Image 1: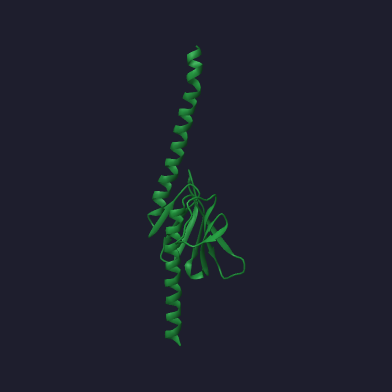
Image 2 (image 1 turned 180 degrees about the horizontal axis):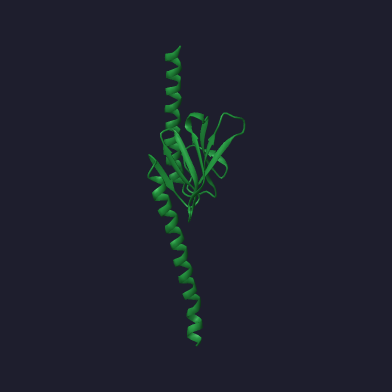
Amino acid sequence: MERGLLWLPLLIAFFWLAWQGSREFKKVEGYRVWSQNFDRAKYDIYAVLAQKGNNITWGKPTVKGIANLETFSLNNVKDINLLIDDKPINVDELPRKAQKIELEFVFPETSKFVRIPFTEIPLAGEWGKFLQSELQRIEKEMRDNKTIKE
């Protein structure tokens, strides 16, 4: 009897871990299906992020699929910042540790921005570099098109 009572907490912990694993598997499977329509995508426990052309789509992974989806165009973005603990950081000089990691998209409208959370600094840095280069490419194309029209 005593041995049974000693094993009960381990049995409960095992079932809880299996249940959590099942929930995470469902989130990842939902992301896998969702991400097939995009050129580039990332998954972590805080947010999913995907890019198709100049459009960025992001949301929160849940057991029932991706929730709170938002889409915006890089054509409308003024600046992209990598924020580590709410401070802008150069993507070429990443710190090793942080409490809060976000990629911030700043729009020309006053004080409008979107912040997408990340769990890993290197992954956020890679996305920051890539999207900043995409933003520069778009700005160059817009300048070139403006010059041609004049």
